[in-house]
Image 1 (spheres, rainbow, N blue to C red):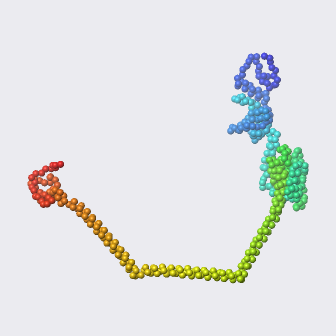
Image 2: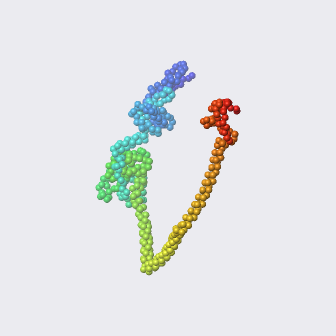
Length: 474
């Protein structure tokens, strides 16, 4: 077999020992050899990419994948790497990662053991933004209690922006349309690029100094710091500390309107008021005047309506008073009195008729009651009642007598049946001791030669006992 020349220093054919015979590696031997080669030949490296699949374990170790458009690399940040800013390890974050390549032998997977992480590109600016924001917030530059109210009807407005940018055109267009009486004082400056932040801060200071030199009634009411949209790098001048401190030091209230609605800059947090866009800031500054015009435009209509309503009420009151005067005329009053007198006469007639009828009814009732209470009438009624009672008593006595006779008959029958004579009549007899008169009920109660008396239904028989027997024939 012809030999092959290694085309790269990373080809394992140049790094693994050669032998004339065939050598067979076990999996662990090969994996260990690859791990040794990665750790010794490549060593520590810097790798750029985007973080994905971030997983934070309860042990404190962080696992994530670093990827670009063509490949992926597994990474591990162990808990002991305390110096690493773990806030950078978020999905979607583009970073620079430093670490050593190795192989995780149980899975045969190569990975990067991370010991340093830095933001890449936009991440660096974002990190600077957050650090400055935290610093200024800690110093109280964002405190709500220090923010000043914006005048409702500003007359003179200072504008800090580029004289050739879209922002100044939008501001002029909106203000001239909504309140042409407003005077704009432009402090031109660059709004992006190197040195722009210093020019913005200087323009804010110049407007303050210039306004302070004027009479009070001619001074600026508010300063607008503005520019149009752009990338984070384009807007960066408004994230510089020098601009933030110039806004904070301004004696005149400041509105910040930088970029679009989704853009937030440090100047937005320090300013007394933030507007989403330059046009939005111009609308806020003219809202008072627009509201006043709207009120004035409706005030005339409202006043006319109020006047008409007032006249209508006066007309109704006049008509009422006219009618009242007509009703109060002497002839009208006299006619009303005559009519009222007629009504009273009719009412009196009705009342007398009702009184007469009521008296007649009461008289009839009294007469009837008196006729019922006359002595002769009472005696007659009592006699009739006594007759009814006598009849009732006779009936009750007759019924009681018949019931007593029937009960006596039943008791006589029962007494007759229970009488000894009735039993003797049926052939029975009563035997007594002739001397004592005691009734003899058993043969054991007699003795031979004893005199006994036998009572029959009719008559008595005296006998002498000759013999006796205790047996009874059944």
